[in-house]
Length: 310
Ligand code: PLP
Ligand code: CA
Image 1 (cartoon, rainbow, N blue to C red):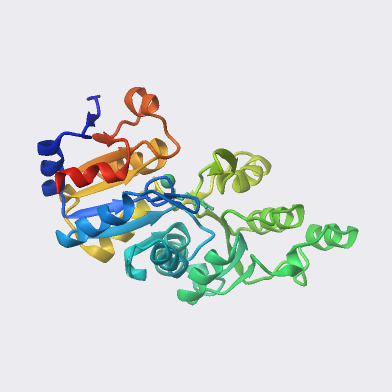
Image 2 (image 1 turned 60 degrees about the horizontal axis):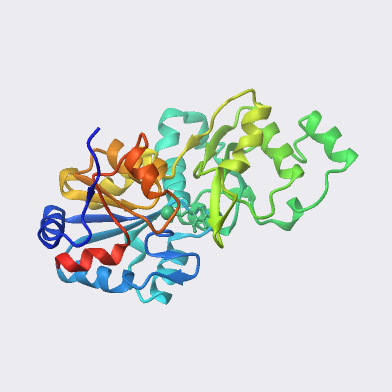
């Protein structure tokens, strides 16, 4: 495995890097900003790339927000973008459910309702693909389990288990609870397909780690005896195929920029992109990038370091 090349301060190397790619895939949190803190180099770097007519795509595993929410967040940070330039794990899962799944599972043409464990971002993207859904942010699922629930769920009673549910989709749910787990488990046991927007086990916030979407599907996996969900966020290549389907680019002329080795950098390597660039403003440390199993082709301290090559 070759050592990642450090580009900061290497004007000629940076210029070569910028000339080598037409398409720049950006991870968002940890690269452009951290939570609500915008990194100072992000706006000028994006402006520089746009001036050079580079195609920019924002690729995020955050399932709680829709593409439209992300466009607004980018704009509020001073980064103009179109909804089309945003790819989120909820969108990736939704287009898979509406366009791919019915081909391999013809029964879903009739029974395509989705039971959602997650937030409004998932619901918005399912709506945009015309997929019916229940669960999610519905307050009816934000309560304790009653003895009556146990009875009805055990009997598979159609008054609680909707006969049209053919898919369970799990993302980060800030109101995750025992009742939703019971429902998700019983739908899957009844034959629903088990999907996850993304499987990041942790969510970085305020300088510490919190439970991520992968920690929502983990209890279900345990209960199902190890059955894994199909997942859509980085590094899953379903997301890359969807991006390529939309932008029709030459992968050798594309680079993935990210802060996390096991999601972003792996995504770029397994997608056989022309390159991967790590920044040190997020989750993975310099030592992990240099010595770990998943190494980027290049790294800089922060995104704004690219400006020197313009
Ligand atoms: N999931 C959630 C809910 C998040 O809030 C974030 C970051 O904000 C992520 C995942 C990771 O997103 P990204 O892929 O942009 O780093
Ligand atoms: Ca990130």
